[in-house]
Length: 240
Image 1 (spheres, rainbow, N blue to C red):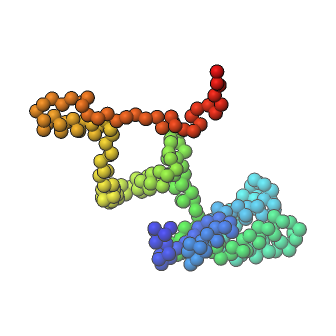
Image 2 (cartoon, rainbow, N blue to C red):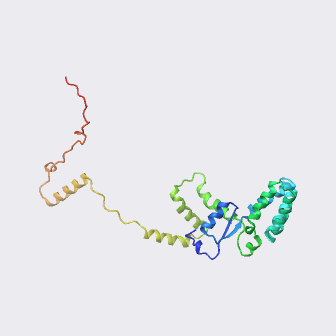
Image 3 (cartoon, one colour):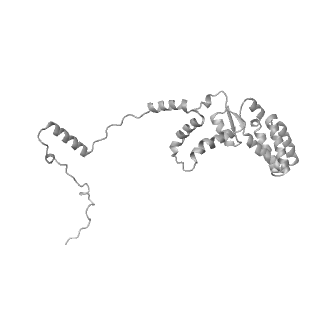
């Protein structure tokens, strides 16, 4: 969100379900964002009241729900909330009515769908969830697909460019950046003893016309570092 410049954007909308932690998340990253309750989540809570009144999965509850959702989407929540308040007074002991009414009433500012649509905001998070499924999960959860955790973000960044059809214009920039970040040439490795000896022999033969006898060079004495270790011998030796 920081890379996208959200804190400097003139207008930001946060379309999400009604979880409290999401509100805290938005408060932290962009407190000025317009809060919009995902329309499908609002419909779930309204549907619970309709099924209480007309039975689960009945034709009457479906028709009742369709009418309320149409009103909510095109006229706003005021009329619907007044209706639910009357139902609460009629059924004061029913948690399904009072609980869902409290949920919607608390988020009344987030369900002003006619206003949001007039401003050009989306009222559902389905496009993001669908993108997560088709862009992210399709690459990470396919049969036989393997990946390392540290490669996930770079890989998905490339996949996002492909899926949004921006590969031609973006790849040239990526390539240039990769070329600029090319690591410097590695320093020569430390020569092994045999490599050093081979270079000495090569220089000797090049500068001395007399054939060089390797046996004349001092040989490195091999020592056993464990030979004088104080526990290298038995502590108690048998004396015969």
